[in-house]
Image (cartoon, rainbow, N blue to C red; front, side, top):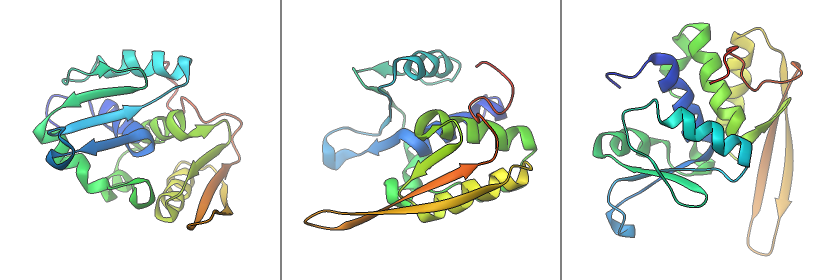
Length: 171
């Protein structure tokens, strides 16, 4: 996006892939882009980070929300949690951009060495990005079944001790 530093865009995209959603006219929320976060420290960090971006985000108890047709148009391609993926352009980007995207992902859905997702494609891509950065990883699967369906939860386990703030900045 024009006017946004590449690293900030990559980190925002990581946050969105991990915790984001879009709503459209059928829900009565025209072009809404949201990023949910309940963890107090992560919420504080995310609040400060989002202020560096050109969109005005409002916080509504557990979700940061903004309304932007252009942003909605781009982010809607990522679908729901099971469909989430990392765009191909990230894989040819410099290492700092890859690290910033992983930082956003990890801040959203990760904890120390583990990153969780229900998207097999996203798990494979996270593992590949870690490899691009010289970090070994493996993927494990936890299958969960309830009365209606089965869900696989993929955990990407990285060899590094703590992957939050991979890019070496404090936000």
